[in-house]
Amino acid sequence: MEFLNIHSALLAVSLSTLLLQLLVRQKQTIHIVFAIFCGSIAMFAAKQMGDEQMGVYKYLIGMGACATCNGFWLVARALFRESNPISTKHILIAGGLAFLLIAGQGLGLIQSINQSEWAVLQQSRVALYEIVNLLSSCLLVLAAWEGCRGLSKAQGQQLWQRLLFLGSYCSAVLACTVLANFASTPESMAEFSKVIATICAIQIIIVTQIIIYWRFHRKIALSHAISPLSLKDSAPKQTNLCASNNMADNEADHLLAKQIQQVLEQERLYLQANLKVADIARHLNVSEYRISRIFRHHFNARNFNQFINEKRISHAKKLLKKTENIHWPILVVGLESGFASVGPFTRAFKSICDMTPNQYRMLHQSCGRNLPATSTTKNSQMTSA
Image 1 (cartoon, rainbow, N blue to C red):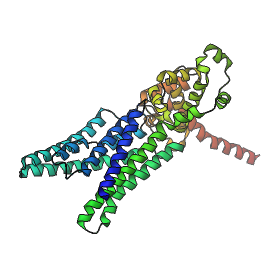
Image 2 (image 1 turned 30 degrees about the horizontal axis):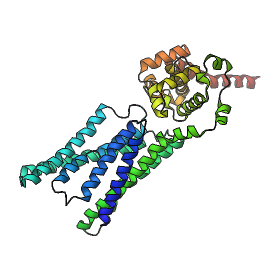
Image 3 (image 1 turned 60 degrees about the vertical axis):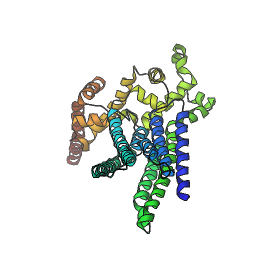
């Protein structure tokens, strides 16, 4: 009875979170993949609840539980990657594992219907599930990596969100792999493992839902809660700009400009290669048109790329001045500054600084070397005098 109750709780939690994703008006990638994951977990819970009474139908329901580990890997990518979190190759990898899971359930269905004891069929199922277990373990590790990736650079809420994710996820994995060994007998170990896995699944779903709200919805709720007085006080006083474009000077645009500045500075999005207006628009859940308008009228930039390149070049100049980076190739400096290759980096640097990155490095490195020599000469002259 307790075993049935725990799976009933998992079914209720997964269906509830699935419904929450469906109720979101402006759905993003995270809402879609998390809904698929919750639906798959719900099918798994339903199968576990009526495994003995369903007969051959349990295999059909089991086919629906084909987006668990692979589905959560996609959830982790959509949760922490701002630009292009899920591409075609990621869908193919997750879909390939889902196909193997469905194939395994299909072999079980054929074997159950025909009541066959074919050795080849049984061996095929065993080999298939060995491959599935191996691939699932790899995707579980990759899901944890998504939380660790960029952890050293994360600040503020971004850091706490990643720590919450890693704490919940890693504790669940450890519980499923370690706690089951404390069971007294092999028979009780199997049932105890299922209970622990179910509790961990509930924990992961709830914590993931909290992080989704924290990252993608809370900032919107806070922006609506800011008083008009604070918006008025924070608005930059640009009279000429207000006269030329009233739309750009309203309170909502001033708030959005502050949010963009905060995202770029605190989260350092400008160091992300191939950053586009769409990435910031998706991050703040606003239209691309509004983001472009903010860059033109509030940041006095000719366009989005010019503004981002200026911030990247400023970061690159700091790297080129450091003596400990003197052995870094120009390509590495460009990549660390957010450029995808050395060509665009060199052109952007020369257009802003009127010299190439290598010339800038040689100029400042030579100045740094000459300063001690000059001061030594002066000291010697003063001593001789």
